[in-house]
Image (cartoon, rainbow, N blue to C red; front, side, top):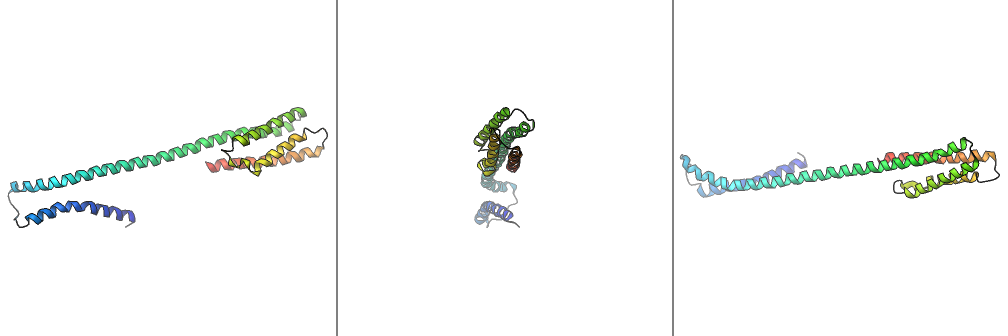
Length: 203
C-alpha cells in the first residue's frame, strides 16, 4: 500500500467516525429496552438517525463538491499555464526563425556579390549595407539570441568589415581576397550553425 492509498484510507476512516456517534448514543440511552416487533415504534428510531445522519451527509456532500470544484479549477489553471507556456515558446520560436531568415539572406548575399564580379564600388556599398544590417540585427535581437554579444558574432562582424575594407583599398594583392573571404565564410558558417542550434534547443 503506497502513501496515497494510506492517506485515502485514513481520511475515509476519519469521516466514518461521526457516523458511529448517533449509533452509540442511541444504544447507550436505550440499551435496556427490548427490540420492538411493532413497526410503528421503529419510526422514531428512523427519524432519529435520519435527522442526525442526513445533516452530516449533506455537509460531506457540500465539502466533497467544493473539493472537486477546487481540484478541477486547479487542473484547469495548470493546463492553461502549460498552454500559455507552449504558445509563448512557439511565438518566440517563430520570431527567431523569421529573424534568422532575414540575416541569412543578407549574409548569403556576400558570396553572390563577390562571385558575380560586379563593379567594385557597388560591391563596397553593398557590403557596407550588409555590415550595417548585421550591426542592427545584433543590437535589436539580443533578447531573442543572447549569444549575439559573444565572440562568434564579433568574429563574423570583424570578418565582414575586413572584406568591406578590402574593396575600399586602391592597391591590394589578389591572394588576399580569397583569404579574407575564407575567413568570412568560416565565421558565417559557425554563426549560422549556432543560430540553428539555439532555435532547436529553445523549442
